[in-house]
Image (cartoon, rainbow, N blue to C red):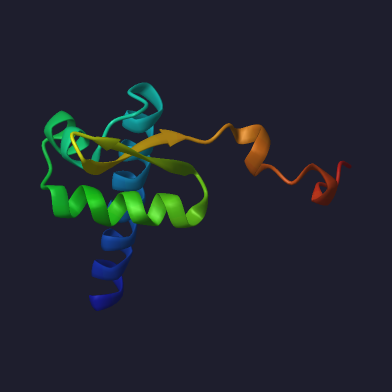
Length: 91
């Protein structure tokens, strides 16, 4: 039973990651706060998943100063940069 619960949690994480990636891909340049408003999640939940996506290299962040305060904005990475073409084997 615990194994099934872990599988469900894993699938929910993947679903949330993909949903957030699609949102960032569509609305590039949003902050965590803006993303949270857009998807209806808390800023903590958005920040958690954004950090995972940044770590995986699927999205990137840029910091800019607005009214004397730093703001991180997120955008998706072009998949041509992610794919390691020299490691691919075609059969």
